[in-house]
Image (tube, rainbow, N blue to C red):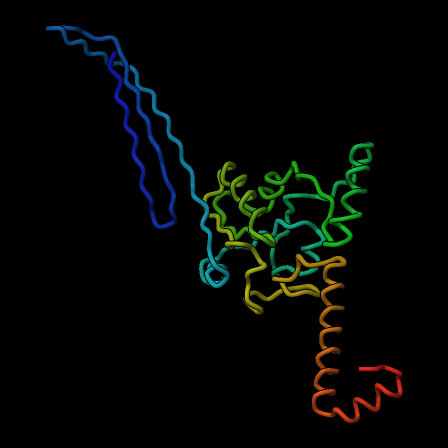
Length: 239
């Protein structure tokens, strides 16, 4: 038996690669110690596209000039806070509303910490994610897959890639890296701030207000020391 193996790889402009393996085998004639076989041939071909990781500015260009559609895979809460106008929403993770005892305990613990302090939803994987995307887009569609930090979009693009989608791009480190005004957005927040919620945000606002008050007080004492001293005396404050 003689086996011929051929493997080749190349990178076209989008970074796709293709691998080809050929096997030949047949019953033939032998002579002079040399055996040749030929009759049947089996060929296997695997094609896979690499995901492009781009900056915010390049993402904007892909949408504006190359016809990429924006696929937002964040959870419902983040999407409602802010999303790119005209984007399609198919969440990679959905809110977990299961009522088995284990889930109830985990949900309560989550809501008392991550949900309360950071405004994060208690979620589970969306088992119908690729099916839902296929209902909106064909595999040859050009898709800019986005999330807040870049991790979920990478996982989503990998899942879509395995389903045969060939033209995929993600924003490196997600929407949080965008400059204000990069995309026209819908919602109460800027796109880069849509992941910020909960008590951490409230605490940050309080800290900024207190900081401004203290700076103002310091300037008042520095510029008007006599008036400041009179106010402190009236208030019974000894410096």
